[in-house]
View: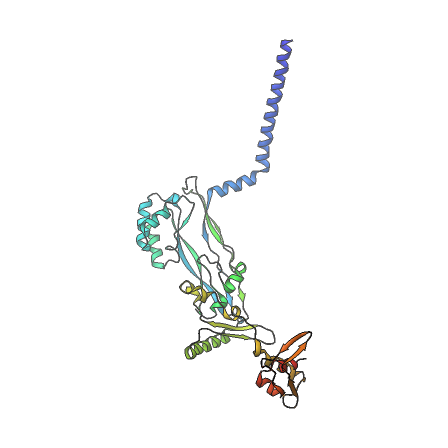
Length: 357
């Protein structure tokens, strides 16, 4: 009986071991067959590092294809801290060339990160400075090409076009409104490194950036220049706090020119007050047209032959009820009997309203 119980227990143990090995086998099979691509992708991401290549933003042009916003190529500095052996020497050399604080640069090259931008000292470097850095030939120090937004006409149409940040993201105007179409898709130079950040001798992979879409505005550059010139004259002669011009095609409602003062240079927006760069007056400073619209209603009445300026008369009693709403003239008691020409001269509320009824 005792021997039989031992045999029975051994069988149970064998079965449990068999089930365990079967489970391990199934897990290995699942990992090797069904998870291969996912694990390869994770391993690839673990080994690979990217040196970013910013895409060019799409161009902004006027209705005739003249360029209002374009791009210029600049050079920026990035470092891979784990690849830098003598951090003090590299920091000293970079600080000297960039005319930057040594401690700040040392902090950047000593960070525990896969890649570190030297910002803002290392952005938009001149050719001479880039050549000096390149001549150092320090391991882990890289110069990458970047695209910088450029507005060839400076302050012309600045409120409409807006401006972009240091990373080429739209911050106002057309640049902000259509940012997802203009910005494109960034590329990269991919290389491989070990767990300590040391570069592996494997081929680099170049991922080409995809430039953004171009946008054509209804603006006519020649009309815009004329509008800007008139605003300059107004500011010089009248010295107002602000001024604006809006030119539209009355048949299509296309905006041909839009300008306001004060304005700013989109290339150097950082030096201006936020109230200047964020207020496109033709859009921001909206108000009810009031009496200025009376000439529109009267012109419509004349076109439709509703009234005759000189022969027909209108009696202004001071108020009238229209659709249950009581309307009053600006003059208490009204203007009395008038021709419609006098209605215009007196800016009579009721007479101009009567012209379209």
